[in-house]
Image (cartoon, rainbow, N blue to C red; front, side):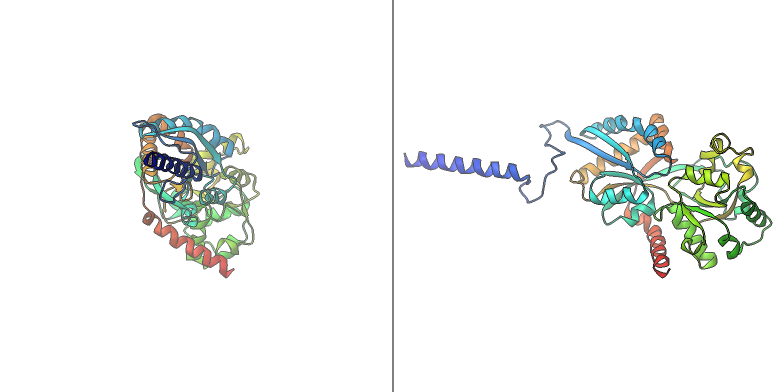
Length: 360
């Protein structure tokens, strides 16, 4: 009788402990389990309620949302092949590059497609897992005048893991005067650059800020913050619109940007000549390592298995024609696995930018 009573009390105590463990969300080692990832049935895929994917606003946000809509199902299908059943893929375009970095740090974003500059600025809260490959270009010269032959820059069949940032002068009087001087093989003075109106992007954008700032520092011991007139554009589309209208004389952007806006230069921005005839390069930066796919360190969904699954999923998507069509919105052609050290040069660039900003 006593043994039966003791057994009954022991069972009640065990049930109470199990209920307690279930209520506090612990995995038994003190780690918190994500409520978004319920345990998988034996032999079945792991269940994930929602995967939040954030994009930076390097194009018009509405354009990115439309172009990436098919990615939702592609990612669900690819992740299912890797053993994860994703209930919903949510795609968000951040208001700024910095907003996406902050979302990764906070865990609001699980995955972010962000430039290297944004990654290293926020790498205390996110990990790089992939780098993008892209089509190489028919022009890849150090000297800006070699780009200024009036012919379009074309894609090549050679894949590249880096790209250039360009300083592009527009059809304004000041813009054309600077291009003419560069084409004559003459160096521009700081006073000439400082007299121009500039369009730049957010301070974590490699092509839209960081590398052009380094270009200025190397040649003039000055930075973007030293320019008398440098306005931040919310997208490259608005930057090219300003360049076309003459509101700015110079913009800084990625090397194939004119290919992306060649048609709109005439239709939407109202120019008569081609973008290749009416704009010209006045500067070319050092190569920039490609964009990243990064994941949040604070997202409870992210562990080694999830990271490996996401790496394989994005690589597999990038290897299909349908996937290439979607990721082309960022000029990506595919993905390869990455590691933090790939972006050490970017860290050096960020350090210099921070020093320049502090000095000013």
